[in-house]
Image (cartoon, rainbow, N blue to C red; front, side, top):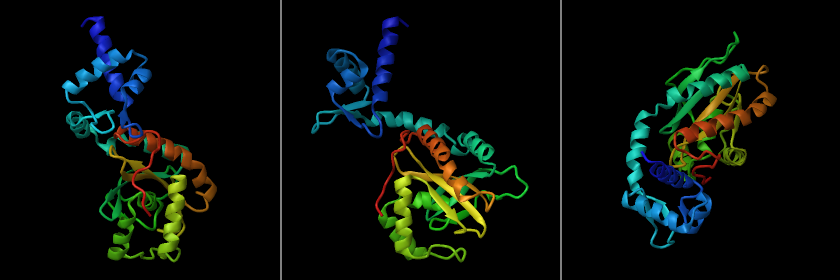
Length: 263
């Protein structure tokens, strides 16, 4: 393939990568500046992309946006993505660096289900049950998800399930739970102590899908006092880093942008 053709292909790919969750629409001038090319060259690239139905011009804003033709590629990518396989290296790193059990939870209906886990190397450890569902209001893994679901979801959840006390320490008051969820949204991680299991502590962060919606959570769990409150807080940045990388792999926002919020 001639060098000129390869350069055009490279520029075309660079053009598509300019669009993101935070920048869904771009003007001709913005594209020209970002790619460091003349506007005439940018216009020709856009014309080719429009012909192939991967970019369209919004008639109202006059800016360029990605077109539905790219959904064919997305479908092919999603078919090859198995999150339970992709997540293993992240879980192994979390378990190794924390010394505690790390888990992937996925949102299913009104619960989170343990889809994959790597157990702690310690003799006394939290033993996960793959396939088991947990409520959204009690464990850190559930709250990290619930905090980023629309407000009406919480209303339906309480109407159908209530806020059942899983232990004597579980938060069962709606207003108190809403305050906790607001705090989780602000810091983008959840910590739970004895809310689901007496003597257990967990810290979790949300994972987002290609639409920016919350998909599930990454969680580290362990027994108190070995896994202290300070340990949980200290591990939050590492969890967030891995969650951002995993979200990006799944087509979600790579910069930590949040999904739906509405409590």
